[in-house]
Amino acid sequence: MSYLYPSAAPLISLVVATRNVAHCLPRCLDSLRAQSFRDFEVIVMDGGSTDGTVDLLQAASDVVTEWRSGADRGIYDAWNKALPLARGEWIAFLGADDWLWDADALAHLAPALRRAAPRHRVVYSRLRQLDATGRVIDELGEPWEACRERFRSHVCLPHPGLMHHRTLFDQYGGFDDSFRLSADYEFLLRELANADALFVHALTVGVGWGGTTTSPGNFILGMQETLRALRLHGLRPPPLAWAYWSLLAHAYTVLRALVGERNARRLADLYRVLTFRKPRYSVAQTAGPEESAR
Image (cartoon, rainbow, N blue to C red; front, side, top):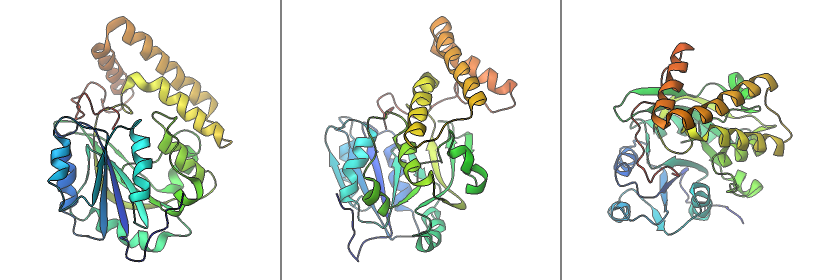
């Protein structure tokens, strides 16, 4: 499948996957409306929502260029369905509970995007993860030179808002939706196992804390998928560190069976505090109960 774009195409296509997210989608859409840089389009792929999300999309023609609603196999399948609709030179993906950080978020990225390709076909920036109270849980994103080896051994780049040059999809195809959590990481490895990414030192995206990928109950599955992605590309994680993380993941699984989800999350956060990190697993979350796959 070819994703070649016409000459009048926008610089950026933003793809948003939704499913029963009427409680948080307005913030995402409002952040897109507010952008000072206007050379972008918005494609929304909805997984058959029944909670009012479709009503929001119908009323958002001022900012949503095109949208579809119907059953899908999950977020990566939704993204793949959006690709043939996306006309931009650069394509980025946002969750329904993600938002562009301020009115100049895309303006900060645009100059780098115009000069990046063909040397750099992946461009990323910084993001902040916030809980439902607005407290910052974490900030992610650092220069490629500082994180290149970690990316090639176990850690994905901050993916919400990350810019993919559309030639990546021509060359590699779409996301492998046999991955439940790590198809974005596996896709980026296709390019960045041997090439370089470009980092823009700007805060551009906010991310609601919660959902499938951030649940401690998915530690083991996430590690299994990360290992599978690395092996597909002839890479491997750091042995000693990987053994330590595996031990923690299995210990959490046992702990959750013994004391329940809530107490296990509290103990996981106690461990983070004792190791001089911020608590994150027992804090208020922003994702709704049906949004976990989005």
